[in-house]
Length: 66
Image (tube, rainbow, N blue to C red):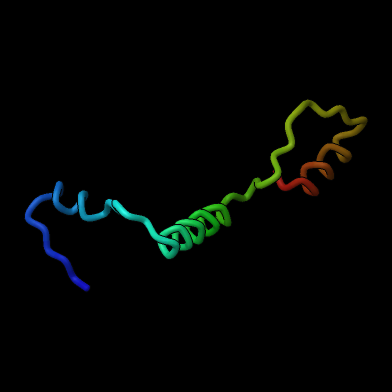
């Protein structure tokens, strides 16, 4: 379906959903799941790590996808 608008304000207002239904929330959940799939670092490991060798640090980096 093609919609034509005379102003950007009309187009912006057309995107608003005043009465969301179950289908709206289903599409919203799908959108968030799709966006989350682009997040490469889903498990962020915080902190300071101490390693005995550089090789040990590099192995840790490889296994934890930094």
